[in-house]
Image (cartoon, rainbow, N blue to C red; front, side):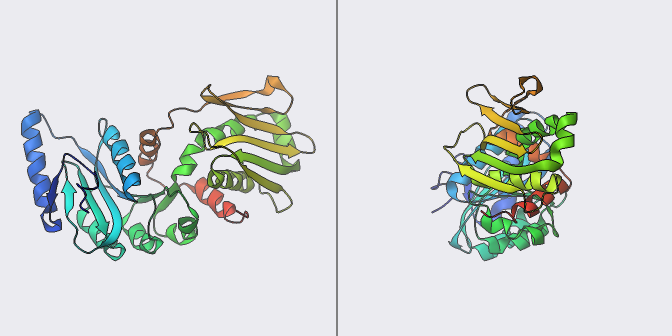
Length: 311
């Protein structure tokens, strides 16, 4: 099945792999003549690996970002083909069904060497991760089941700046609890926390959040971590977080239908901190990550700690 037949880049042209760059140059020239203006500057190459539905939503998100800052998008799904037909538009290339052993060759040939390269991993053969990490300035994990890619993280971190889009989705939840730690009674009681319970629609995000707390507060195995899977809420990966201590307990919870979450010392409304959830769309999340260029040490520590928590 070609990229066209799969519904990727419907306005594009089908070409042989060897003709991609020539076709891109021609399409850009034609687009420039039609628009009668300067070409949009490209800021990065974004390589998206995943199945067709994941590529389609990623392409839509990157197209939205293209209105404010251009990227060259390379969309690749895995299969058995060694030389599949590619689909090309002005700033995007879709390759459907490429054999995993040729992923690194395709990316090396198509990325713009003068610009940062980001690999957005939405699932696939983890055997290709090492080679792709060597070609990427930054790798963003975003698989439905992150277990296989997370298990490779310690090695990947040695080759590229690594993160996971779940970490971005957790930004407001991390901010909510961080605000509470500005209160003296929370700081003083933080050494006495004995249990963490999380209700979440995404148990992997909950595990990563627990890893962040565990790493920041230097918990030992004596602090119990309980993750309960509940009905997912499209607005947020987590529903409720409770930290229980001998001196102080805190709760953060999603305010359904209000676009925010609230965190407070348990039973003390005067301590409540309200944090807006913000725009949780895929375009907004990936746009936030594309603005980062350095390693995220907090994420790396959180993930290492999360891997020690029983799933």
